[in-house]
Image 1 (cartoon, rainbow, N blue to C red):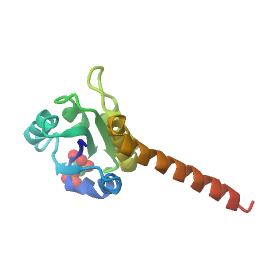
Image 2: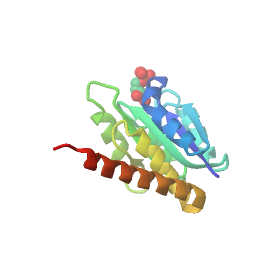
Image 3: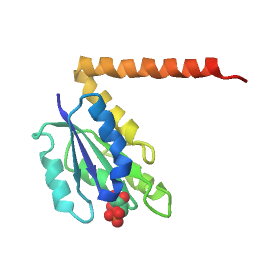
Image 4: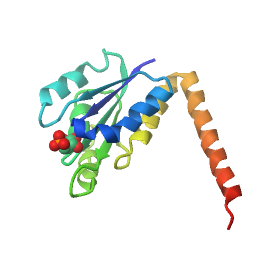
Length: 160
Ligand code: RP5
């Protein structure tokens, strides 16, 4: 199975990114994480994304805060699907990163999840990989069924 690459702009993003790493590992999906910055280490970010396909990655997740150009800069160098996680890292509560990540010009898409939405980034990455992996697709379906049953149970237990 192809791997998921996770790139974060700073080590300060790791606590927000960790749930994505955990979720992918829980499902047995190979994950490789790096710290590359669109602003501080643009060459490293470029080199990684240019070579991502031949290095066995099927989806890339890019997480960054503030003026978050990382996901777009990664997407510029590959046709592998790129998922952006805007990180809340400033006085603007992540709205800066959300707009920087989501407002891509036509031609270079970034599938942007919610601010700090690491778990959904991981699930979306796996849904993409699952298009050509039935076993992974079944695991994702099981997760949905479990989630549905939990909500039904909570509804039953509601005392009001
Ligand atoms: C962004 O700036 C990073 O993704 C991080 O969210 C934010 C702050 O980085 P540090 O100053 O904490 O390294 O590039």
